[in-house]
Length: 466
Image (tube, rainbow, N blue to C red):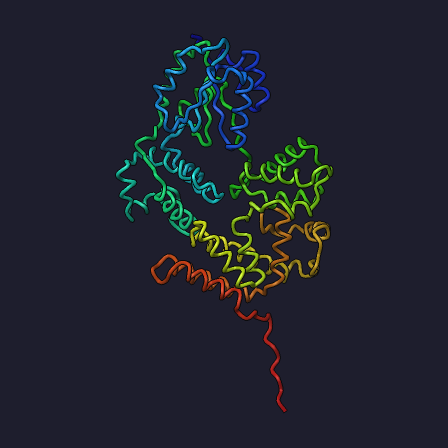
């Protein structure tokens, strides 16, 4: 066995091509931790596999484990067993739990709610289980989850108030509906891995660990970092926690270049506005878009509008659009569809409230700073030329989404939107109490927003009867 020391390893690598080059030249240590965005982690892990083990040898020279459930003894025994064919034997341990710590509870809570809000329900529940194991929960505690324990768990998720509480309660309700067995989940066994690093890996073995979340303060992570065996593939995020516009733009441009397609500026802005935070979903939409345009080299705005699903607001977009058009029948139909899909009423209410707040902000700007610049029917190109140079406060994280928000805000007065906020507050109280059935509360709110008589900015002049 070969012992790895910090002096024998190059500095930490930050990009996949250099890591693959070092693996090919045998300069890299025989282990690697990949963490960050799940899609890019998976793609990078497959690139490492392609580099090390030919496809025809993977039946014997490659094993894949789930770190959340596989006992470390089983993983270590496989490492110590020589491969059947000559060459390297690759062990890929997914969802590696060895880099969690109790100090990371807050970060895990944020990530869990982020996954839930992105519609990745099962991934959110899996990470919730990791948090429970980290906290030392037993199966009996989970099965007997009472109001006090649920409140403590919501506090752990930092979801004990506002919209976050609705997300947290919906997450717990969904988790209770799943077949969760905490006894089968493995906690951190990093001390065993550190022993393995000290003793050295067998000459034939390469250990690949992948994770979505790690705590860089742990002793084990720092040991990997010293060895130059860490590759962080996390995406840059803005202050709101969303993937930054620059990261999304780089991802979109890279995928479209690989497909040999160019994209018109307005079409690119529409893609970014609809992208959301799920790169896997974004990749699928880009693939659909490329197939849709066929042999045509350029992607146009009409193509995006026709085929690209809105993941930024996708799950709620039809409901908010129906509300914006005061289409009561359409909005009630969308509400029924979303509830039937398992969406929590508090989550729906929170998103509708966010939309109303954005519309109210847009309406105020249209009545003040932008009164002379915004004209009904203004095109997006004109918006870029006349409105954006004035640097109005952003309504969303995307200029095109701001433009669409202004268009929707044209249909309302400030008085309308203030009235809607009052209705939202009342609905929030009712949903959090036993004052009514959730569906009826939401239906009443929708009817109020769609059928209430529009309020004028100024009172109509009194008629004079002669």
